[in-house]
Length: 386
Image (tube, rainbow, N blue to C red):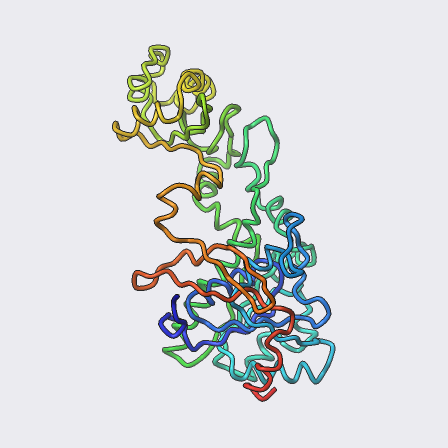
């Protein structure tokens, strides 16, 4: 088990006032790199994600998503409507290195804990804010929720087939990407603080993170006459890439085929019917639906392993499409050692993921589960004199 004092952010104190996913995802990454994360929660219910259920599974009275994103953090119960508790929080911020907040615009100012106010308390503090749509413009007061941010970002028109209409991602990508982006900003601001001794205010939003996520295809759009992306009608996997790029049904599963010249694939698949397209690279995009229909009919005649035995030795970029059980059983996944069991004194035990990073060849792991509401309040108040 990795010791926190072996990790790059050991000794840093992060006060996380955020809820749901974006801010807590950021503080999870900082925790995995050694930071101490003190989660500020309302005494009456705590983080709203404690009751944000992905299924009917709960552990120790809390949702699995809460456990997954808040493992190994500490919980300090603070009533933000109580002046005594607010004073205790301000006292804690005097000794903190990072503050993360994702309140609705205007709320943090009413609490007197906006960046300018907190900077007067602790000019070395790195202050991070995540919003739905930034701090200006007509969307500022709209709900900063992932599906709604996806819907405004244009990203839904990159998924699915062309005849499906907009297709959302099956993950809260806006939250995760915003959390990752602000984490990068925090780390950069900590480096700057090491040079200047001064903190910074790092800001992003779900919309900004989603726009950045699309930088490659958006740049194409902005420089090709602003033509909207055109998805394939059949087995679409990327709006801007030609056939054979896509996922195909085999006899016993699905095979993904990435960028591959049609002549080479035609020879390996023994497909004379692709002859009209061999020497016409432009047709690989313009007529990609027709080409992919032909390839699909050929792929479905054999098993995935039979096709892999032909394609992989020829250095064709392809892979079997795995479900989660197949992933977990695969030696390629097992070699990464990305699962861990975290526990708590009240017999809570949950199997979850680990940090995606390795530090000095070792993946950080911690055995403590997500906290109960205010579980560490007494110890934190005593330690910091709150």
